[in-house]
Length: 414
Ligand SMILES: Nc1nc2c(ncn2[C@@H]2O[C@H](COP(=O)(O)OP(=O)(O)OP(=O)(O)O)[C@@H](O)[C@H]2O)c(=O)[nH]1
Ligand SMILES: [Zn+2]
Image (cartoon, rainbow, N blue to C red; front, top):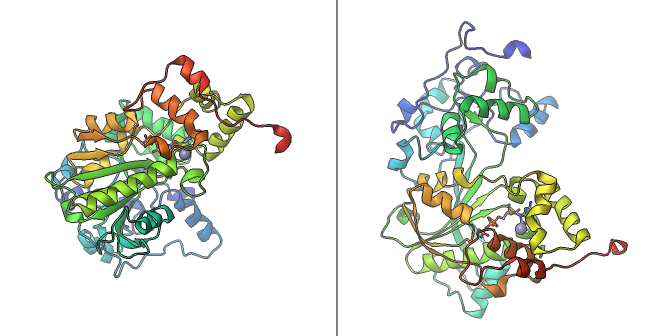
């Protein structure tokens, strides 16, 4: 296996052309990350296709259920809608964490793929119908009308387009965005993944890295052709994954209620001729992960859960409050050609500031209405407002924070 490790000075090693940020996809070059025999010497990217699922692929290969050199058949997999090229795609400072041509690889690099190169899309765009219980209830009660375009039926069936995006990191651009040195960033990535990608160190000539992390999904309500038109109204919720609340309806935070509220407002915008977007990032537990999150829940509930201690408890376990680093988040907005958001469905100062710093305007910030906040999640929301989250109401002071308490636990009931 080790014999496969290509080094820049080994004979035959000649990375494929890669000019990140070039407007011409041929000049930019395809992302070639595969270690198939046809690609290994010309790889211009480190890591692996598929983010965390590359590890499952390894298991499938190990169990001989998948051929190591399997090549996907891309017939009929092309995007169902056109996300047209934007000037932002060729501004190497604007997009550094995804491949703007990622949905068009089989089209732009057909020749290379036919020649035997293993080049895969890192973006897929499809359409779907959705049935969301809370939204079905709004349709039944008449708050959301059936328009036949976004809300399709009396049952509240929704019509949506969606794009799944895997991360593709241009390391010099990531380093610059995070304000760190590229060499140091590469070393930290190498060390903190258990030395998983030695080429981060041995191949400084390769600038693109496909990290083993989850990406994001964009849900589009309304006419996708208008997303980049600054005369069209745009409602956007950027949401970070909270599986416990989003899927399993835990009441300790506002995640699902805010997500659904964002969806309803996105649908209303689309019904009024604008566009609504939900951008869903896989950054569970503020990117600290669910295990850390549950450890903190235990500490909070056992020690008396108050808003004044909320972030401290997270820092005790994780060392930091948050590892989402919203600075990379606006790339997807640039990919969609967005220059202005009319209604931003978030109270997060970190999301807001990252979008403004990316040169995108936000005209209105829309907090979650009080009646949608579950009682036990008051602790979190008050702590966030005190830490700088946007509110139209009063900012809680130290005394308020120690008075905002959540449900306590009696361990004998566990
Ligand atoms: N570590 C940790 N993460 C939490 C906790 N509660 C919620 N989260 C995570 O916090 C993140 C919340 O993200 P969002 O729903 O996008 O909300 P936000 O960034 O706080 O701000 P808004 O846009 O105003 O809702 C998700 O990643 C959740 O999984 C907690 O108690 N501990
Ligand atoms: Zn949550």
